[in-house]
Image: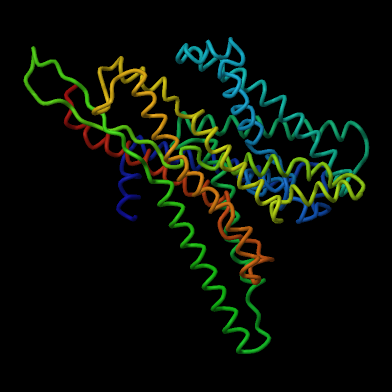
Amino acid sequence: MITFLKEVFKKGELRRKVVFTLGMLFVFRLGAAITIPYINADAISQSATSSGIFGIMNMLGGGTLERFSLFSLGVSPYITASIIIELLSMDVIPTLARWQKEGNVGKKKKDKVTRYLTLFLAAIQGGSLTYAFDKGYGILTSSKPWIYVYVVVVMAAGSMFAMWIGDRITIKGVGNGTSLLIFTGIVANLPNQFITTYGTMVSYKTTYTAVTSILWYILFVLAYLAIMIFVVYSEGAVRKIPIFYATNTMTVMHTKEDTHMPIKINSSSVIPVIFAASVLAAPRTIISFMSSTKTTQMIDDILNYQKPVGFILYVLMIVFFTFFYCNLQIDAKKISEDLKKSGAAIPDIRPGTDTKKYIGTVLNRITVVGALFLTIIAAIPIIVPVVWTATSSNALSLGGTGLIIVAGVALETIRQIRSILTRKEYHGYIRK
């Protein structure tokens, strides 16, 4: 690790990229600690931002929502807008589908539309959250209309600024900027969560109780690390499809070039879990602000994934969204066309339709494994508290979407840094 850090800061260009990234992340965390004026953050219940759709938004923002900070919306409007535009680009809106095929020019047009949609969604989400929390907890220090508008404008502006920070990191820094903002927020809260968990699990009433509770806490930490290792291993797992490129033997005599096409076992990352949790949580969040009746209670029980029926729906939605998003991310038809154009082929598989079918079959098979992995990780925080009651009231839950995000972003950033280091190593052998 020390050698790796020395190599990173030894290279001038890479050092500048890393320092720029750290600087932008510092700005984001600074804004995340500043509460919006005219907001009484102490009035917000901790339980209100730890479950439901608010819990998901708070997790993606790294705890910014529970403080109603300048970046309380984080990059969630941008993520939502990007997903909507990608879905509409699948021959739903002809203009977007055409831009999809125009390369960088089309990408710039799509990015512009995505930014406009982000601003619209940020205003909608900011207004909805402010209204919901003010009605439920009275977070506004005054009921004047201009204060409400002011808070919504600040939230929307903060979301757009967070999006800009993410773009700058992606262009001038290291790693994917949007993912790093989410990663930083989750990691920044980990030390406090470990301390809080220690306070809830460890008791010093008697010597026996102290020793026993400390041992249970150590076991809890070891279990957390074991799950993290499992997530890291699963995130790095790929299925390699062999590819060979035919060479022109009329001009040069050498063997054919062999390589492979890697497909991640979990190519959809954490998106299916977030989608599934959001679909179940949104109606429950709306119901929570309504008067309690038998109907609302029944709906809440059905959609609660900590109860049997809700848990089954949760698992089925994770599996569905995993298959849906994997096939959205990886276009078997386009890959087969690109292979054919570049003179490449899969051994024993005919180019064209057969290649498309083969890639689709492989993708569906490994998606089964990916869906199983996501289901296990998502189910751990639900099942463990039932089996291990000592962890039911802890701030730090075992498993969950946070671990997948942290592991995935960390691995991807390290891969990018290593690729830059490798490119720099070979730079000296290339004649200018």
